[in-house]
Length: 281
Length: 291
Image (cartoon, rainbow over the protein chains, first blue to last red):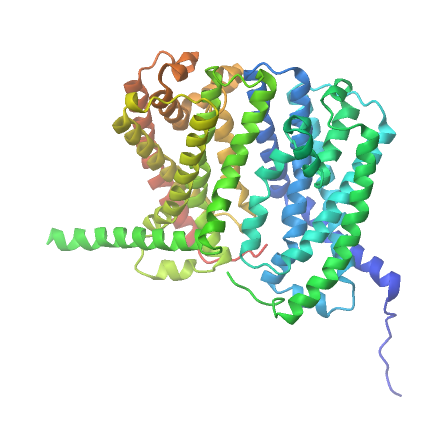
């Protein structure tokens, strides 16, 4: 009598998509909590930066609201760093380690992989940002007074969707890069902190610069969240919160669709030019 | 007999340092064409200076003539050396061991490893120097930082600058020794130390602003004296108007800097040697942690 191996039903269609998303999100959430040193550095380093800027504000006699702006901006740097290093440049790292070819060969969608990375990264980073906010708020006696919780959650959700959409879009651009990927990700830190107003109200950069900077979702997201968390911040706000919500909504659609089409295009281009497995150190 | 024993060693030191300098420059710069590399090297430091300038001008309505402004601006500009030189030297361990996977070849070659690491820091020193120069010149031209070129004691200034860079290189060597015992994902150690020094050394605010119980940390850091002296030598009385180190003359500050540098030199030799021996015992010299 012939022995037949049990057949394992293979997922396909939306089930495969969903399984891929969960599978890629899993190591992000579990891995980042398991490595304690990362947790320490991800929280400790932003707090050092926050503290330095808080003391600068205190040295020049800034109103207390600005201390709150810095703490909030510092907490949001965790998301920007996560998008830069664990979304945008992720496919470059995967290429370096030889995993990218496996991703391409597997029957799953690359979009699902990126989505899984985004969701996992978002959850893991949210925990860190919360800790930074709590420790920063406690250390510097910041008074958060949320005017409208529902609106705050909506702004945060839209900001994250647009931001990680941008991350997914730039991940496909980084697919073509090699050694320069590291340098470009490194370059996109301080200049973005500057133009997005992480440590001061973005309104101070002038209307047109602030508007251009609004292409980065954290600019409008952070500005709106500050207005909702600090009652006196409305006078420092760049635009009305309702307009910023609309702007974020547009960015969500733009970046998610952009990510999908750019990924298809870049994947084909990278295959045609033979860049998927190259490793120039 | 003695010359035959001493000169080959010195030549190994020099050769290791010289070749590592060349290698470091190639690694840092050859990923892009010179123009793109120049832009890359300037945008980052200018952006971090601009953050402080905007923070300051928002609160003070752009009162750039107040003494606190050159204090913040110049402190931030010269602090770039800390990130580049100290962190750069320690990062070379991770880079060579984990990324290029060349550490075992360096160890088996006739190379003096500490000299090699110091050489790797030279490229970072050059890049930092350009960034510092551009930032300071920008401040003089557009932000009313008043440096009276004719009255600056340039000899003393260069001596102080170089002493500080040597001190940072030795601190970097100490960190590099510690890095030999750490895995890849501990790369944040260098940044954490640089971040802590930024906070405690009064780089961008006078130490009086720190809570009283944190100030002694600043007084133990050689960078505090180094930055104070550099500021004083460039903008004279403006920098010495803050009470932190008002009781010390420039020569006092320099002597403290030299004493602390010698202390760090001795410390770096012992720490590096101890860590290197431990790394060899544990078989960590060519370990690749891969994540």
